[in-house]
Image (tube, rainbow, N blue to C red; front, side, top):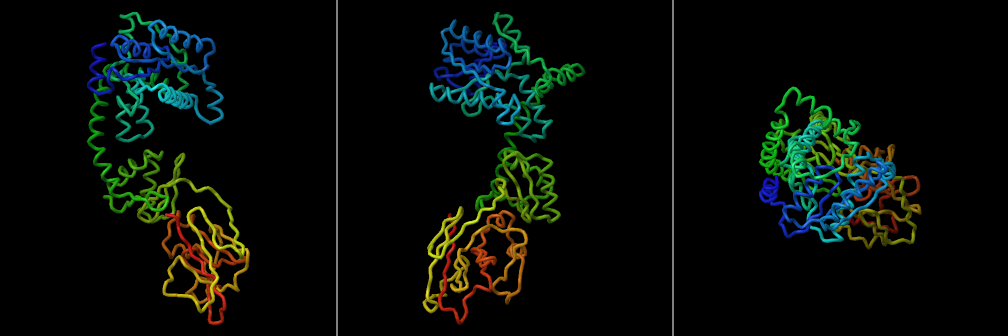
Length: 445
């Protein structure tokens, strides 16, 4: 076992013997065997233990046990107690997810404070099989079949080569003491359900199941590495940034491959395959404006494109502009105002982001806000005809994100300017205009 451990560490370039390693030890047999393998191999290690106080005296007993092990072998020891139930409740998380977040956050703190270069966990081959099966059940795609990698940044998993049976045999032969967490036998948690019920049921019918799964995972990991470069090239070639959104040009993808490429693009942002199928259908059926949400992100269908961004918060924000003001800053740009005598205007330098108004027609304070359903104005060029702002946006081929970001300026109850786009016919300068208000929209880059 020790030779296999040393070989795995070397073959996967997990770390060097003179580097400082923080070993996560719970008191269970897996982490105790990991600590012993490191110790017997003369690696430079320290021990870290989390006390989640979920099992009363048993939790405190685990901490005492691990502390005594560290002291007996003259190893640096770090521990912290957590109010896990409170943290989970306040953050609306499951117990296991809350424990994972607290654990790894604290490990990072210890590593930074003490200068440890690697964090070692005792995930083994059986954990790997459980992870892959759980990924399959969640629809994780080809990369979910890889399971856990031996190394990810500072995190190393040196026991992925070993089965649970190997670990138990080594612990028995070397008389390595450990403490069993009674919650491991409960099927309430999803992983325990796979571990204690589903996988044993499969193995009862297919005795070689674990061995075959380990072989398959090795193949899938290599296959995924081959595919990753191809998929990344496809993704990078078709995505670009536009404003505060990431745009994905779906039209450039062969129709039969759209779902899988889009799925791999969106998977890190929390979207599932079912949502991707619905996105593809919306594109093919021309349902522009369709919106899809994950926990922290959203995708909007914009003709043959997908726009990825964060969900738009409902806002009733209004900014008022008094007559004496010369400029105002908005979240995405700046407006500048200048009162001119009409005869002094150089119209040769006009563009969409500059607007000229009959100053005497403006009613202060002016108000700036976002578009609302039912808004309408009289666009310059339509000879005084009324048009819904929504219709104007459609004619301008604006995406849903663009519509949400678009600012309107109001004079009294009337829209006088779709800022940076079009002024209202009622506020334009005429032959009788004496004073002109020049406004310029300067977007932040």
